[in-house]
Length: 155
Length: 181
Picture 1 (cartoon, each protein chain N blue to C red):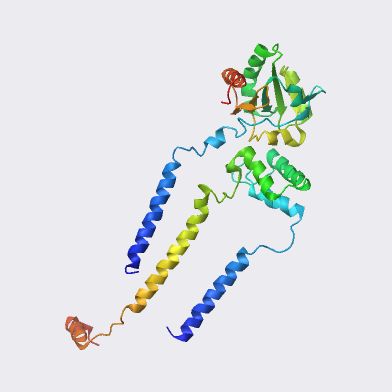
Picture 2: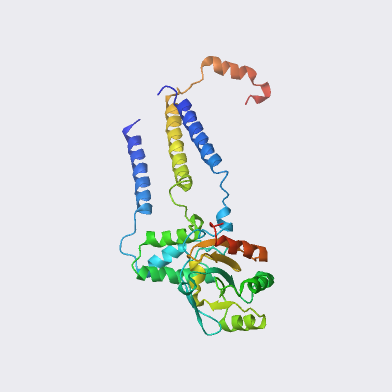
């Protein structure tokens, strides 16, 4: 591979790494209690609604949960403690994002596994294509093509 | 690596086989089971301290030593009306038993409507108000009606989502004297 092509791949890799880093890097600065309460409520499923979080729903339970989360934050409970309190009450199904353990791990691991497998496959395919010789038609090939063409094909 | 394609195929096959094994192991676990039964069964009942519609107070501590049936309801809920006669029949059987208590906790209703409804419909067990729905949240309710049985030592021994029958209530009461159902 020429040096120029290497630079192109390197630049592409750099762009991908920077984009991923910007996406997954934790946002700086302390979150306010209001923001924490909002984030936690958004993680919990409203048990009496269809597909709504505690943060989005206007139901009795959701309103009570939002007040409860705010109260717990004021009492100094951590996000993990608050999340666990709701799992203890309602079970794992209260979490909108499955936890990365047990069967829930599949949800997180499978896309990563698929991505790695796809990247591996792509690398192997690219190498194989590069190894394959470029074929040039020989005189015999040209004669064969000419012989199969009908007179009407002639320009 | 001599045959990379073969290795990839083997790896993918192994992953698919592992996934199949994991899913097969989960076949016995009904994902809806959690939806049909409270996860609080077998755990300590939440504490509550509520005002009653008759101007009194009812607390979890005050009910210690008794088998308690807690029913979440409200005046506008149709399934709550459906179970009303079962609650009345059950309570008429046990109201004289000093070791049994029944508390109806109003979930998502105004105090006035709940008070009026309870009076007009002859609901003569303790009816408590839950402004802010903290008790409803502590009991992890998902709607109404919902009914819980609490043993004399404060454990939740039974739960039912939806309307109860007299049979359900008797079974739940019996559960307070044995292991959680």
